[in-house]
Image (cartoon, rainbow, N blue to C red; front, side, top):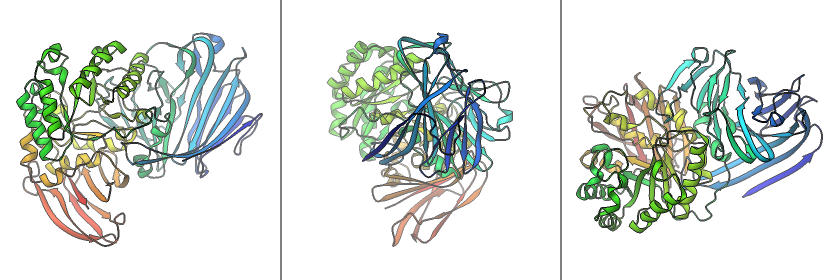
Length: 614
């Protein structure tokens, strides 16, 4: 259901504004975004939260190749239009089934000395604010830089990732004063005087994805991945997005990045089937070359009641990079038929170089349809540049037209695209369990895992490929068995891709719990936690509640109020750390409790627990 109120106001429209200050307030009036016109006609913004300045005045502006379409100074206010929206929509993946998109928006127009106009769309939600630039012109618009700055306090605690094109790095904990001048990835988490701010961007399609970098005066500035880029007729920047909360639950549970994206282009989404997948490559780089090996993984999926297998089709005959051998391999259809007979869907794998034109996509997507393959993982993008963002947009749209689901690897962090393309199941853009297979690299650790739910996984599905019980000799894990078991309930992904070998799951003492793993959620609740230290969450699928926690390096005990459960007594099994052999085994205890009780669990260093309450 959608309710919209629109008004066009000529002159100044503000919530407690003045002649040089223009304000949009959240529906509950707790957060406001203010646009300020300076003495020289330059623009800045500030963010107020509960009458306190959260982000002090920070510069705005866009620099174009054509100076007549540069908007940095000598700007004058023209008019404003106002919109209020309160709508709900559903998506097949994410933190919840039903999304609520409620905000107030003002679209301010400013003219420069040459008489050209920039429009700044400003939205205020109860859990954050966002703004973007829009410029229209007959012909090409060349953008050199975006002037947006983020003036954040130097004593703020931050969790930020040094930039890598594949976003496979750590979110380092440091004060803002200690952050250097290297490029930094979105999203970025800040603790500011007891409040929480997650800085990111949303709605990035015909525009490069951006990063941020510290300036000489200690602010962050928007950083383009290329010196300049050109679009036709209309320039629309990403939404500069601020998730804001007095507690971490607001950040973890937020769906603001999806809300800032366009509605779905897919009218009928009933064919979209998220789920749990098996992943042969992790256990054997050449597993995709042998039909008997692949059938063993299909049998695993069927036995565990999982509904997908990742068959890296283009890796037939190759461990890492695309091979054309698959196009002349006779047994592919036999294998997909076998998977279908066991109730297991198949998705494939290829890399951007084989899909970067419509003709190439038609070829591969068409072959997949002939084989009965229902999805594709697209790899080695490793770029935020304009061509890469346009490629993702086209690849998702074309895949939808072929009835294919999509995953991206070698990937940037999500910007909420799954609202526009619900066939997007998951994205990598994370240092995940594949690093256990790689010698000489740093692999995931418990501190990293306890940071991701507050940072990377806030903004979209995350293909970490979790639950690796096997301790690989190449790069042994330090997390406990119970920690690994909890990951599919802590991490959200539309394809939850289980990385380990068949025997690791079939012989697991937690086999019964593993058969209950889900990839879709009706509700998500943050229980407790702190970035890089621990997190406890509850997720609901249907009438079943999935409760889990993971811990970093300090032993602790968590106390969980079970007031989210229905009334009555509930009996369930708690899967927790084994006191003698936590790396290879777990302890299982039965608990009876009601929704007025509290569950207490001891978490050793690198440990965790989980349970399903049905």
